[in-house]
Image (cartoon, rainbow, N blue to C red; front, side):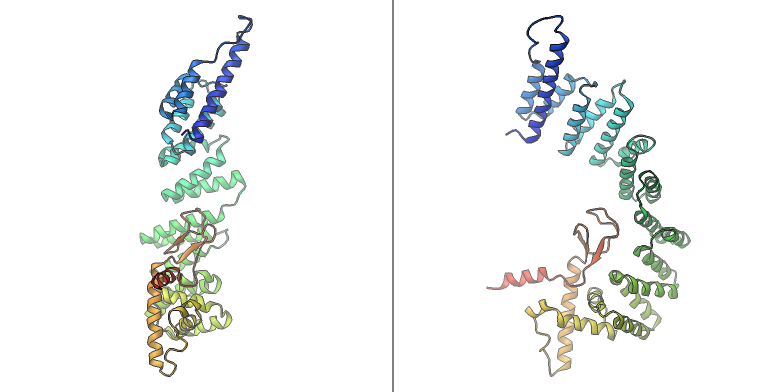
Length: 402
């Protein structure tokens, strides 16, 4: 049965047929007074291909039959766009290349064809070809802004961060739109690459550029802390991790494990105890975040953190369906502690097997923190869950009930 796109193509043919009929009638009226010429048999042949779902033959016939000129060029663009939307990229590319091959093509139409062809290449995953065309279009065409936007996306995908910075800065000037957050992340990416290569001087310089004259990103502080940690600058690392927890509570899942490791390495967990105790008195709502982070990362042996975990377990309503921790071992502290440890271990395994982060814009979930969401491509939109996701546990429970 003919599809919607088939009828769309057929409509294009009929429009061209009508145009041909009108041109023939008025162009030949002086030579032949009387009836207009009959409908061109070539249009009927192409229409027959389409209605029989012979799209390849229809395309071949269309390209041979219709010369690219001022009257038909928009039809070619519409046809190429349709094929790209349908995922038939080879056909879209061929149509747009056919337009570009016209020697007398106007500059504006050539730019339009190049932009369409670049989008074809991008859709096909031919990033190098798309990049070349977008670079050309970003230099003086009416597609400058759109081309720079696409270049930023290509450079993000290819991890060409310096090129992304250059394109982003040009885009800021041309569009008047701020890309401060994106460019800050590009610099952080460069910093992380430099740190991975042990070039900590360059890493620090890139972080400084990420923060200089721009709003401070949460990632910038975390990257600085990681560089300080890797270079054994313990004092700076601890200061930065504490600041992250104090100012940006959603990154506690990243900073707290590093604080525990650093204080344990220094043999000064008592200082961490005092710091967390003061933090919780000031912000009791952090109890759940600390407990969740401890469960996910198997952090134990620090009394203030253990207390947060126990409070979390006792107040978690979903757990009541499986075990009554409130009454278990009421007269036996050892039994109670063992029960809590067992539940905690089970939750830790569950938390590690389920997504820990979710994008607040599109809902994409992941096991680890991703600074750019793979789904919506926005930066710094992922947030950690504050509770263990019990969905799979409840599903297994309901499946086993009679």
